[in-house]
Structures are given as structure tokens and as C-alpha cells.
Image (cartoon, rainbow, N blue to C red; front, side, top):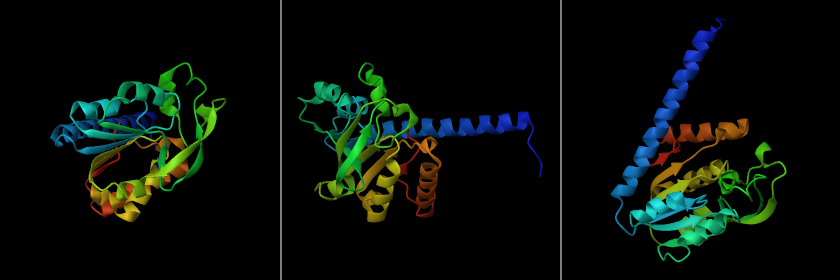
Length: 218
């Protein structure tokens, strides 16, 4: 078997990163185009809202937002920004494929640096060592969407490694067909098991010719 030279390996990795970054730029462009095209008052769901930067973009376009955020530190900032906004519904829960209690992990510096709350997750990682751990509520998002009573124009998922479970459930239930556009930040780097599940979801999306799910957002 032929072994790649160092130069060939570097070139292949460079081109891979370039393609990946190009897809990400394309996804961000598509996301903004989607926001601009939606009628005012359309319902958007922001899962992993954190301190509300994406919620803010949605509100600036006159969209109604349901913001899910389980982090006890981030949600205080989220409430300070949007707690009096009738166009934003804030729900202090994580999202998943079933309703349950689950352990939630924070980085150790989250209390002093709010940007560290972006890494809070249902999925424990090395970065959570010595961080706070709490039991929180997880909402059944497919059931929530099914019972909403109105269409969801846009669903954004940035839930730090818990996205595979949720995407599988949405696809199994066919609920993706009731959502205008779905933008997902995936976290394959967290584990081989998660990478395998995300790859299977990508293959499923391609095989079923699903055009409203973008897995390259951010």
C-alpha cells in the first residue's frame, strides 16, 4: 500500500478544512437568507439559546422565538435581555427525544466567564472536569413541536453533542417535514460514537433527499 508523503498529507488536510469551512460559510449565509425571507411573526425555536445572540437576530427580523436554555448562568443573561419581550418565550429546559431528568455539566470557569457556558452540555467531556453538575429537566422536543398547533419556520440546534438523539427522533417521526428549515451545529469531535451517528444521519438525509436540514451551521 502506498504511503502518503508529509506534503501530500498536509495538502489533503488543508483541502478538507477548506471544504469544511466553505460549507460552514454557506450554512451561515443560508441561515441569514432564511431569516430575511420569513414573514414577521413566524415561529422559530432556538435550542441552546445560551445568552440569546441568535434569539436577538430572530427578533430583529420580527420573528417570534421559543428559546430553550438549561444553563442556570446563561439563562439569567437571556432573561435580562428578553424577559420582558412578549415575542420571546424562555423555557429553562434542555431538549431531547424524551421527557426526563438528566445530569447537566458545566465547565469549571462558567461562574466567572459567561462565555464558558457555551460548552455546558448533557454530554460529559474532559472540559467539564471539576465543573458544576446539576440534575435538570429535559423536554421531549418532538412531542412539543407536534403539539405546538402552528408550524415552525426555523429550528436551530446547538446542544453540544445531544443533537444526534434529537435528529434521529425528528426523522423517525417525520416531524422534519413540519419545519421550514433546520440548522444544526454538530459535534462529531466529541466521540467516535457521536461521529458515527452524525455520519449515519448525513447519509439518511442524502438518501431521502431531505433539503431542509443543514448540518454545517456554525
